[in-house]
Image (cartoon, rainbow, N blue to C red; front, side):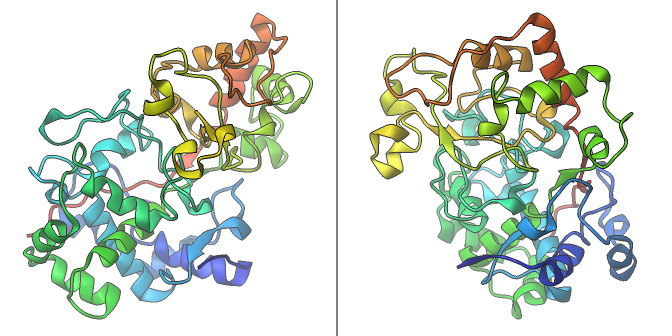
Length: 365
């Protein structure tokens, strides 16, 4: 079961789970340089970044992040996340497709897996996934724990069986102490690998953007153009963007058919979206609404990575999506001027905030 935690419970996990990663640079460093005083990090971190809702943090009851064990689990997950030994040919890590230097995505239309294989979906960012449950564009994974193990087993991504992954990690002496500190003993299991990676992924958050500062009272934090864009964004007769990109994380965590890709032959098979799980015709071609935080850094866009720029994204919405039998009823043609479109882009850029900084660890031996 998963629970939305109250403030007293939320703060402790957040303090500890971020302790292993907040405040570090993204440059390669020696492992000795990665070591920090846990207490000083905990004391310096009192809240999530401005604009994020601590009441909406979601942490599964069977994978808690409180106490020293939680911080060690995050540290273990950080190592596993960047470890290419979790792939068949030691060439692909989680970070290959969700790179901190590329908005925690990879900048490609389709990610590259083992042997140069290409997938068929764009890699979504992992930013602010601590506020969500279902994962992937179609929501097929019930949790981050489940999601973390998916690419490892995918034959065109990392191409290992879970038994092979467990065997490879078990042979790395340096992991033994981290597993013991995280779970009580040195045993490596697929479940523990998933829990550790998910724990690390939950620490990747973004807030304190110009928009957040503006909303908190600093009316100089956004440009006049961005302010106008915010007005258009939330005006249900103009942009109506908040009908899907809702709340502090700018996503309803729901699924919508925008029509993107439906002009391609065979789309109902290759890009059936949520329908593949629900078998409900209203879900055909429906994909999850992504967060818009730091959206400028995670190009290209849409589930199929077919849209290269935010300007193109705005044009798709302006014309009411791409017409198809299953188009979401919320998709309507918008009466936007050229200036309106520029203002919307300015607003979207103002959603780029402070993202958790992570040091890439030296591989364990």
